[in-house]
Length: 171
Length: 238
Image 1 (cartoon, each protein chain N blue to C red):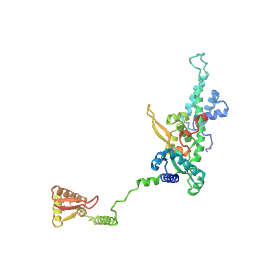
Image 2: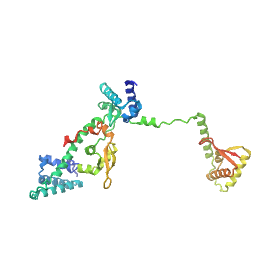
Image 3: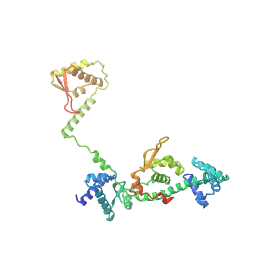
Image 4: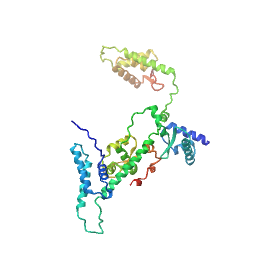
């Protein structure tokens, strides 16, 4: 298969699935080894960025997803007229940043950093699919441990969790 | 008359403490604990006088501040090489700084969110549709549909023809039904089970008919067959 065809197939698959597709899955379907495929996808990503296109490919935890370009959002708004968005409160963002850096983390550990109870924030973040339960801590009560999701990475424009700005810059 | 007063809202005790420290323009590593504690407690008193419910966390912090203040008042223990002379404020400062770091980080994250949430992804409905797609049965034809429809209409007709206002005495027995079925079969070679049921006046009779058919199968007088699921059940004499 020549590169142009491979690129076309990747574009097609990402369009149809909507959800992120892993490099591994793409490599199996296309019968191209992962290293070569990664290079081709990076080229495709550049193609999207270089030319004037309305969509782009983003990478999340080794998976690829097709999404619209954020700078064109005003036109989406014009067409679809979304209702007023309920964003995240400052308290929820604080909770989210603590979870992002200290995951896996229990609710009581979050509370102790913030100095206030975070129940409502955690519920909201779970609803918004920003965080998820990742297990339980061994110990009294086996408290739930929380971690961030792929949705979190996507919404914050991160390829993976190591792309977060280093915590030490803020200390 | 009520007066609305806009107060700065403090999410938690750390935030309030920060506010006080910033206002006093003091070094966070060298907090004048007595002053800050006074201000903190005054603030809580004001909140209470305004009838604002205080979260218990604010009171815990007040207690912590008082504890640190009292520790600072104690004369220092004579120098001992083994026990390090630690500042009672140290732990609080550490927590304050950690909180401050995350607070600042949350602003950075907010910035990132405000850009990237505008990159929209398509949901996976299309993929789900492809995964869940079902194939039509092989032999589906308009004739089958017509037949099913006619059967339904027939059923409905018999339902509509139920005699209203009459209550029949339950004087039918399985044995009666057996005789009846055998009688029909003596003249007709086959009969449809559906027709037997459709002729029944009420549920009880339908049940008795069913039992009669089972009994006859057991007695090896008849046999029944059905070519496929939900097809008509044919009753034949042996």
